[in-house]
Amino acid sequence: MSEEEVDGFLSTIKLPEPAVEWLREGQYEDADELKTAVVTAQTRIKALTKSGKVFGQGAGEGEGGGKDDMTVKEYDASYADIAEKYNLTRPAGEEEEDTDE
Image (tube, rainbow, N blue to C red):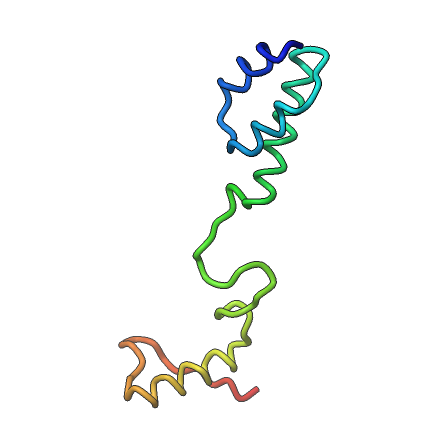
């Protein structure tokens, strides 16, 4: 493909400018080869930016934290510590369970 054809195709896609510049440096036999390079670049960028992954919702991958990573006994002890520190009571209707197993 000629440089003009490559530039024309690359002007129609949405990629960060450094990725477009990297793709411009390549040599492509045909449009299919260029499209394959674009898909590869998009996949790599998504992997680097963790595109599509939920963020800001508590602990990250492998960081632990949160009630799900605690035993019921540990959670209740933590809750009791906080309640005592801030002079709180359990919400109405929530019974304290016996966790002395």
